[in-house]
Length: 94
Image 1 (cartoon, rainbow, N blue to C red):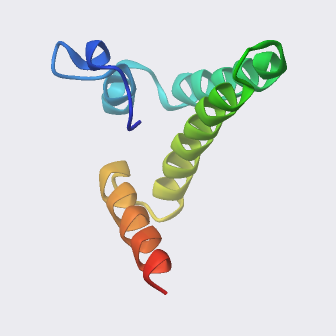
Image 2 (tube, rainbow, N blue to C red):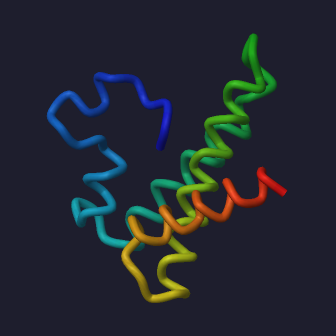
């Protein structure tokens, strides 16, 4: 996820990248993503800045989109992310 604090990748690999590379199984990783979406949505209105938590939930939803999309197209998640980013950039130009 972009915008992660620097200390998330101080060992050269962020937790999300480590999960994608097999630290967690696919189902464990999807459960992690879903759990974080639920956590941030449920508690957002109790925060001083609810938009911040909604942004975090959205980021985890985007990660789920990348995972499911890469599986549907049978391609590595990194390649799917690159294609998705390119498509987003093209939409912004139109």
